[in-house]
Length: 291
Image 1 (tube, helix red, strand yellow):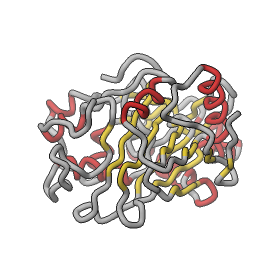
Image 2 (cartoon, rainbow, N blue to C red):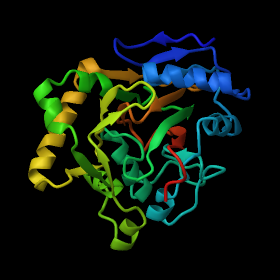
Image 3 (cartoon, rainbow, N blue to C red):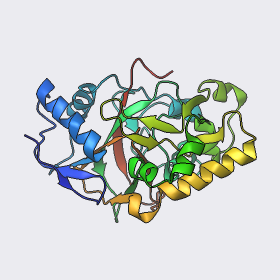
Image 4 (tube, one colour):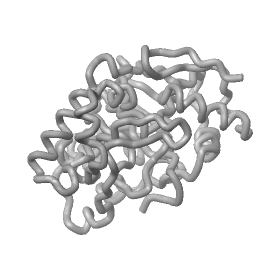
């Protein structure tokens, strides 16, 4: 039995009862799914960095994994890690050096400092993201998470009625430009077209509703752009109030798993031109594979 210790009043928990180096059977997987439905974020404490093979096998136990393609598209360079199923969210290049100030991947990663949920910019969304800390800079470069279920519950009935049935268009390029990246060419934009998702999501196992927002969300479908942007900004400000936010302080060896359909998250700044940060993520998809 997996014992969870809750870390926040509404969500997030940690456990030391799961050995990520051991094969995961169906019973453990099902227990973790129940735990994720309850806590939405789970911290697995490990004394040493998880091996890539174990990280990948653990993620595959929950479904197909997304393959990283955008960083190669943006930079025109190869990947640092052993497989494109490991998403590189650190600041090291393919030679193990810290990204140069003008490296386009550095600008691309600045978008991770905005509140978002992974892969809302694709029609096939992410369920779980599983991020492993191999090397952390001084101070850890914390990650913040927002409980989108509690945020939805806190809306009044008028607000809930207003957003029921609305959808937003999401684009990775919209959020990356917000983060300071130079606007990509039309050809690059075409490699990742936008997707549309409902503002209110329902967990199919529990029936619980949550807000679905992200910095990827550019506008409300069918609304004037300015009006939709205003609504998205208002909902994001509400959903990221302190009472809905948990901040994780990274230690080498930590593995954090979160449900993208029940949470948002963002990185916090650090001196990424001086200190190396090696973080590797596997991203579980609903079904199929994102293009």
